[in-house]
Length: 442
Ligand code: UDX
Image (cartoon, rainbow, N blue to C red; front, side, top):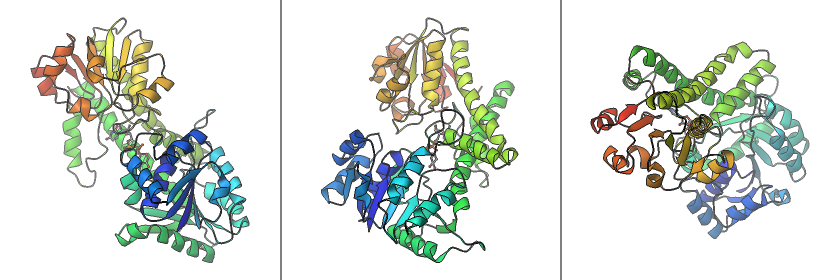
């Protein structure tokens, strides 16, 4: 099929390349000429495993191209909307300007019978509003939220665990005829996944929009739940890691996303829960999701805790100390520093008068743009040299698996390790003479 993807950021670039790999003819559109040039050369503008290979294969096969001109989307059967919906600068709601502009511009190139598929994360009610413009052009709007995780984006796009499709419904809640046809078209786009048994759930617009924010709200809540338990563990001498393991054996709970530490960050979870609260308040149901404010607060408090542990370990103050921060990305296998707990902890330590050296295998360039006041060193060992304390805040393998206490001891006389991700073995580090501090651990 002929597809267009409007917006080639994280979501769109991966989606375009993945759809081309499935055999579709894809044009990716983005207003950023530099990004389009990079993608056209087969180079991802951000770090994402497998993406470069997929881009190059699609381009070489003649199935994938990129452009800054939305006119080139004309003639595609299906147009995916993959532009950003960041947090508004003046509050916690989502900024929908990119989505609105994209739909307005797309309306001029739509042909009768086209299908427009929204993938961006939007506040509930947005699709219904945008549908008027799309309908006016004789096309049909579907909402098909994306659940991809950074670092696994290619895999998650090609083999998702579910496909959710919001469609226009009549007053009885039944999909309209045009919506049925459009949903069948989208099923055709995803035919490989559907044939492999991936659930294809057709629902109304509001439910499809809510599925996405509810999923992220649940994941954020799960992380903050275990981090709240970490706070209790800290005043009782309990060990949150053993607690999480024990809870996780209950199949109803499960161990995943019970990783206590410096908490969640990134371009999705933090802004999505804030936008959800803002939207619920607009709808007069703020109280229904007021717990998400606590989820956000618990999450941010873990960063304070990490800073406090470093201060405590260094005798009460970090002033004038040399501290190496291992990690800047919000999680490993990513160069994304949006709302990164790692970078926030580093910046706070700097603010308290420490000399902070930050290293990361992928995120240094992005981190430097956001926090230019910090010192960045690409080489791990060079960064660690002469550190009074080491703070591990992004669990890259380079730090959690490939750094031994014996090796660290050769680089620095400092014997303090604060493990913000609870990913090191305290017994091993303590046996080697280090003062080990975990999050929510004795
Ligand atoms: C998330 C959702 O998982 C994905 O479905 C959605 O489409 C986008 O948002 P992503 O932002 O890539 O994906 O990151 P994810 O892997 O979910 O991790 C989010 C944050 O939570 C990271 O900062 C991670 O370090 C943290 N985290 C995760 C924990 O602190 N503890 C855990 O147990 C798991």
